[in-house]
Each structure stands twice: as structure tokens, then as C-alpha cells.
Length: 350
Image (cartoon, rainbow, N blue to C red; front, side, top):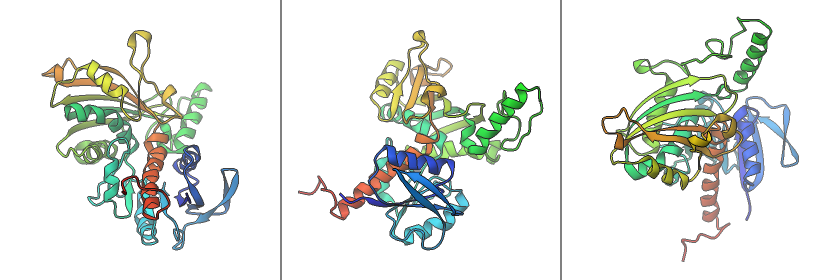
């Protein structure tokens, strides 16, 4: 079949670069590719060809079927309506539209059916939320999660290239005896330290990152009454976020039942053999798309331990937590567009 006309806006940033990598890895049917950024004047190599990066402008989305946005929220708010008016479906990685009632917030392993409700914009969730809900959804479907306590351990690459560079510089400086290295990307030294502060503080002294986990999980799981308390922490790890998740469920769910559900779940790799020292770690969860889940056990502190579990989760926040999730959404969007145009056969048509 003929391919899609695809635009990547923010093509030179960390997530934009990863989107291009994922498009190639997954053999997305790209007919024409347009790379956009705040400034042009450079080229990017993709599928053996050189593509010029164009400066964003009013005509940037003309003829585009699917536009992958990897830009800041204020930029998305300005340009997403322009792209939609041009006929493109926008898949936006920022927080600009995530909680808008008319915009679906989608993790394809969890709620792909919500894509059909879009009005031109589909929101990609926060990376920590994606990692959590991929692991939680099969348990929620089986037993109904009513409460979630989440503690995240978030890699420096979640703050972009500057976060990675800062950890590298501070580690070298510390090894050379400089115990007061330069700080710019984070609030404090990140090398050999943990910082329980990601994004700005907001209501109830929770950070915006923590509130994103609460609000986005409710929307994706279609569970508006889900009780969530999150603590989000930046850690000196280069890549892949880790999360300790404790859940309370409506119905009893044993660790063995949970493991069976997780072993069959889409997008999940069960790594849970403590006696063999097998458990998820960011070292092994990086540069791939599966969410690694392990350390599944009862929460013995709960009033009813038969309805409470604790698990440990790791996932690559640049890939599945951002770029891959967006491309997976794009695949579904394009499949439906191609059916509408008669480019592929619709099996539901008699």
C-alpha cells in the first residue's frame, strides 16, 4: 500500500531523534518525511538518505497525514491546531493536551480504543505514567485497582541531553576531587545523590510530575476515583526509569495470579525469580520497549493483604515512555486512515 506523509516536529531533540529511530525500526510505512524544528539549517540521516530540517512555519504541515510532536507544551499549543487545520493527526508528547476532555490520552497496550474518539489531537502520556499503567492494566482488569502508591526512580535522561551531560560532568569532577561540581540541569548535584523534586511544586506540596501520575493514570485506566499518591525522585542513572508500585484491589489477587497475568500481558516482560537474583533493573530495561516487572509480593502491611500487592517495574522512558508509544499510536491512526482511503482491506467490511 502507499505510505503516509509523516512530520516529526522537534526532530533534533532527544525524543524526536528517538522517534525517527523507532519509525525505522518498526518499518513504519513512510511515503514522505518532513523534519521540523524551531530552526532549520541542518540535515538528518534516515533510511540511508539525508533530510533537511525545516524551520517551523504555517505551511509546515501541508499534506501531512501524521505529525509526531516532540516539543514543549507551549509550542504544541501554538502549532498543533495549525497541523490539525492542515489535515494532520497530531500525536503530542508534551503535557499540553493530556487532560483536555476531548483529547484521548493513549497507551496502545491499555486503551487503544480511545484513539477512535480523537478530534485531530492524541496525547502521549508522561513517561512514568506509561511505564506504570502497562504493568498495572492487566491487574486492574482482573481485580480492580482502587489505590496506588508509586515511588519513582527517574533517570537523568528524562531531563534531556543536558541531564545526561550534567551527570557525566559531575561524576568526572567528583572523581578528580571537586566535591562542589557545577549545577545547572537539576536543583542540586545529581552525581552520588537523589533529588525528590521533578517539575514544579503544586497543590498539596506534590510536584507536577507526581500529579501527572495521578491524573493521567485515572484517565487512561478509565478509573476517575483511583486513589493515587506518588513520590517522584531523580536518581543518578543514565537511562530507564524504575518504579515501586503498591496497589490495593477490589477483589483478592495473589502474587501467583498476578505473575500469570503479567506473563501474558502485552508489552510486559516478567522478570521475577528472586532466588536466582532475577529482577528488573534499568541496566537491562534500556534500549528496548518491554516494561520489565518483578518483585511481585503481598503487601503484608495492608489491612487485607489478599487485596494488596507490591511490584517493581523498569522501563526505557525515552523509547516506550515516549517515542515508541507515540509511533505505536501513529501505526493505529495510519491503519484507520489507510482503510478509509481504500489503501488496505478492512476485514470488518463484508
